[in-house]
Image (cartoon, rainbow, N blue to C red; front, side, top):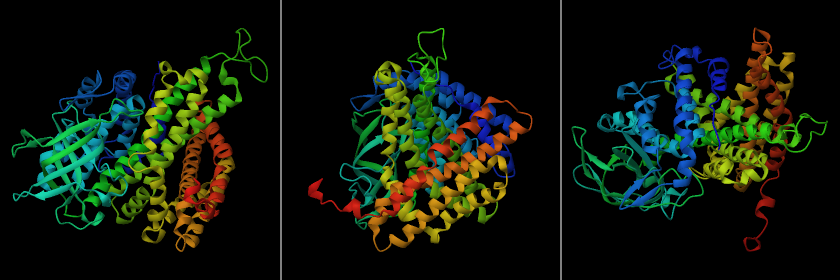
Length: 596
């Protein structure tokens, strides 16, 4: 059976040594996030993930959820685990203290969320969607809505969902048909059907707050006529007490490839009582607050599943005896050597390890910028932080799930035939993480968002700000002989990214297909460059520790070796991505549709 051990040392290294959260102690929430407190949070979160959630992962996969008479039953143990989640105060970790939250920086919450997803991805989606609903309401809800709904979303007593997709429309939300009719008392009556609604129905919480996109009767067609509504499962009285059941029901559960423990629902709205969130016809903007957070959460899922898959493959490789090392026996007293001696097995494990640690650093680096966007004291820093968050969101969602799936597959491959057998757990990781490349906007859509919207936004201000981050690091560390093997490849990747960016600026306006054809390669080129910056920063920190009192520490030594593997074996792929971008769209679009 698979196991999971939270990478607590890596979290501490990133938060305390690489990012150094104490630098921001003057900002709200950071003053409380002392190293001691953060370490205590990490330790307790690891215990919850390892001891409560991980043992339920296979249970959830085997049992799944069931629907009977409109009631969804979650797998055995999930309801008790959810109560422990709430009792531990985990949903409140990074929420606003005005509504019962603990107010800690979101970068700390990201660490908790990764552990939860690694231990039990399906379970983690219940509180994950709730936090998305919290974010949408705190940014766009009325004061009355905030006072009524946020305290119980923050506590975890209530959960939340996001309702976008309909049977006939997914990415193209302008086609949605769910309608809202004013009721004459300030509320609306919503009718329609939404599909693929994660955590849409269950009995673990007293109430479920659905955030639903709909078109008010008579509103303009297209996305300019979409509004956002709050639709509670149970109506809420002025005193906060629960009232009658609303006219929203689960009409079916999806039979899915993975994440069986999460209830993925068809939701039917039959003149359900609803309340407008924000302005009429401005719902998509409000929903994007929730969607962008969800996209970062999905990128996190890619890393999380790759991490747990790697851990189990690593243990198998050290234990499984098969063949002899090419350089002679390494286990002469045994019948064969452990397969970790074989270069190809090591190649697969190193690919996954280098991705996991580099992508985790990039995710936390981005999350920190997100905190600065909300909490920094000066407008310039907030603007820069907001730019970088917007720029990195599609990169993290798409690349981390592309490579998270690839990592789970490579980890499965380490097992040989055992990886195809359910009892080892590797195949569940592959099935579970596969959805991450699809939902919250397919990865192709993320690439188009990066190339079509984020690069051009504010005259390219965000991407040039990112280039400036790399340039500053290179300038500060380029003369350090111990870092040259990391700084030089970073500089090459940065040039490749700049060339690809300029090529789009010169060739995509008159021929938009050039952007579409090269978008996925550009996104991967961008991600590799960003992760190279993270590895350079991590190696700099590790080398400094090794030179100042931590000589021989295997953790720091492994960082340097893994970083070297990344820049020599993985980062050179930027050249291939640049060549693909510059190839343009002609070969992509040349084949007639009938010839496919």
